[in-house]
Length: 141
Length: 141
DNA sequence: ATCTTCTTGAAAAAATTTTTCAATAATCGA
DNA sequence: TCGATTATTGAAAAATTTTTTCAAGAAGAT
Image 1 (spheres, helix red, strand yellow):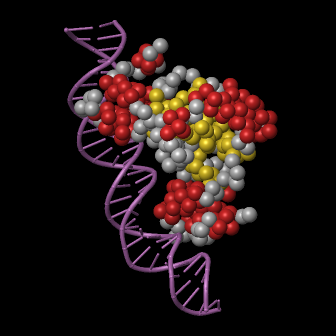
Image 2: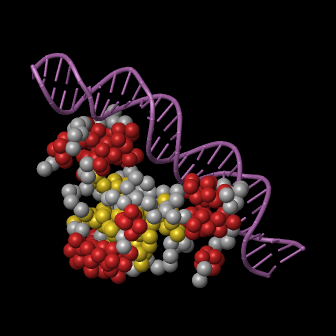
Image 3: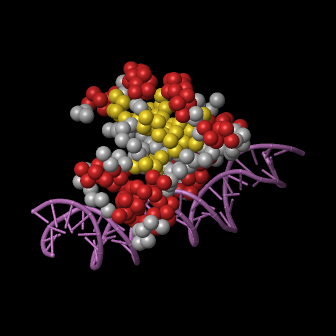
């Protein structure tokens, strides 16, 4: 099922700003801030307003089509999100963001946490930071 | 080793704003924004400026004494950080933040990621969201 | 006690995000 | 395909958050 269909089924309209944001993120090699999305988006749709980028991101994030990336210094980056749970791999050199599928891998850890703390874990945010394969090869750490 | 010593050894001075921020966070039951830290801090030190809170947080974070908490909507919350690597447990009901020690628990997952993607994982950010023990008992989901 | 230099607080500037509102465009039903 | 309905847009303004600047003040070393 395509993203447009998913948006529709969630009750949202398919509009030009939303299409443009998706397209910009699809082509992006690394997480983009609203400003960056706006700048690139205008090349596809001249009259695109920054406000609409903010609004589109909010809607797309709610629909699970887009994901916010959390970094030390900045938390304003967005990437495309595949359906299902994924972890994020962030390359500290080229900035590329990769998705890594699966949530089961954490079940052992989560069970341990629940046992020791009495916490009931419902969700999680996992981001791994390091060097992607190409950057590993081409560079001195 | 106390935090003051750790700060000193890292080359920073022990100042009133930094002391106040630490004290406020020590007493806090949940992550606080710079604004909130400022408001509470002024009760301990009248002339405390908001700018100094921002600056103190930056320094304390660099020194590993304070940690920023990343949430869906807001990423401006800070909590005290214990030495060593910890994961964060966030209660979605009362907002409390707990630390959970250990990084080894992820080694299996990390090895798997490295094997499958060629990524070299150097660091990670893991936050678990759910219900803490008291909230589990006292509340309907 | 004094000197050096890091740090502070206030004001201002910059940057980011949200609100408002009339105009526009997406979807639905005929 | 054409209207009618209503969500959505873009621009301006407002609100909020964060950073910069700089003279005055305080921390730490001698």
